[in-house]
Amino acid sequence: MPYIAESFRKSLESDILTSRYPLLVQDITYGSPIGVPMQLSHTTVMPNLHSAELRQDLVSDYIAKEVSFVQMAGPFTLEETHLVFEGHFRTVPVGLMEKDPSKCTFHMIQHFSKEHALGVSVNSQLDSDNFPTRWKIM
Image (cartoon, rainbow, N blue to C red; front, side, top):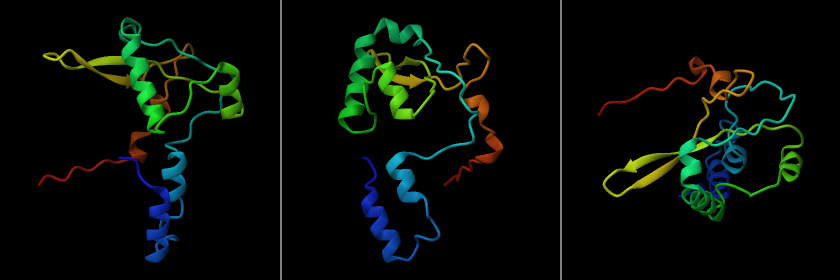
């Protein structure tokens, strides 16, 4: 279920919490930046993983569903994407992982650890110490 940014805005204002969470509504609406990625000097479009090439129908169906739920946008041509991002961008390859072998169902993944030709991945630009995760055992 997607978050409803306007409802969050109203709740924060009614409880006078806007100053405590000034970017929450913006992040819900447009996405939350994580880390400080390096400045892009060229566009990189990485090929998808072999598993995605074998079942392009599953990848297309997944993306179409995400677009219909307004969780993704597109598809865009290379030129349109440059306009959307106002310059260079990079893609990450997608692939499929078997979800339930007995039903032959798959889950699409985005491979953020895949390095491009210069040996850099999206994940390699993040310092995990800046994003600590704590698990509460109940």
